[in-house]
Image 1: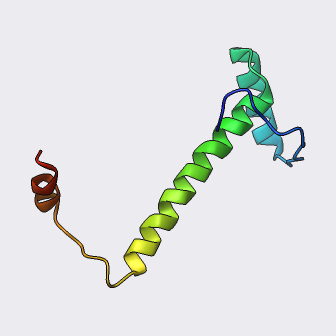
Image 2: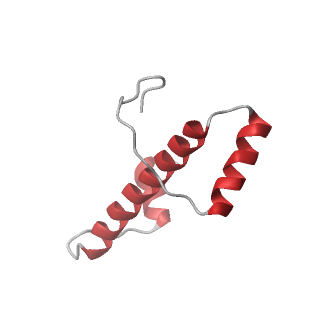
Length: 78
């Protein structure tokens, strides 16, 4: 994601009262807008979800060769 380049579309999000209170507190303490923390949290989630899906796909692929950490270090020369 590029910094400072955002879509003009708005995505409404419903928060629990507890989440809203915590977000408000965080925004006041850091002097950052709510959108900063929502974008940051979503970017982290999307990255983790992508890695999870790759791992799951590899796990389900029975033709994928599995090697040990030692073999990987040897191949990488480390």
